[in-house]
Image (cartoon, rainbow, N blue to C red; front, side, top):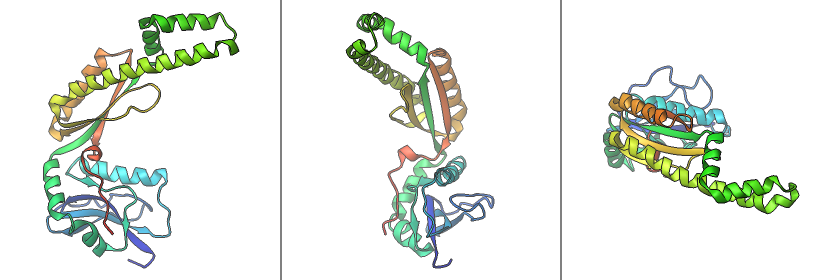
Length: 252
């Protein structure tokens, strides 16, 4: 390794891992992913140009894609995106040696498990109709706006918007809980996250055994079927356990 390159760290894995020779991560497509080992654990790494600014969408995708592909076959503790040290010795000194027993125990806990994410989004027209018809005050505000010029209806428009947002937030809390309750019997852990987008309904991270993936798929399909027309529900995974592992980075 030259003075112009460093070592990029993706995650922590068991020391006996074997790397697919076609595995790729951050940077040039010809850069090879390797393992730095110490005791019972190792770190997924690759060389990186120290003059190169990290942070492009392609970089983030490369980082996550490698971790997610790894999580589908063996336990991995994700390291924060952008972690770079000077050389392989620093990987050991600043990360592996300092936390060997802690990382080893965490990997044993993750054995056979991965993260899945259940996300749901409201069908816009359906949820807005549901909000308005369930609240007579909002229906009156909407009717009042129709009888006024746009400039004169400003206060009603603000009040209506706030009322709709509050109602959707109440729906969101209930639907997030419904998703969490549905997947909980299959999970070793559940974390509810903030839904994304104006009409996001639920965003739930699930730590589950890889051997329970079919059951999880079936549960999510049943959930989507019961709410068809109102919610669009998706399942992503297996993924690295981002929501179930503390923030990891080198100490140097």
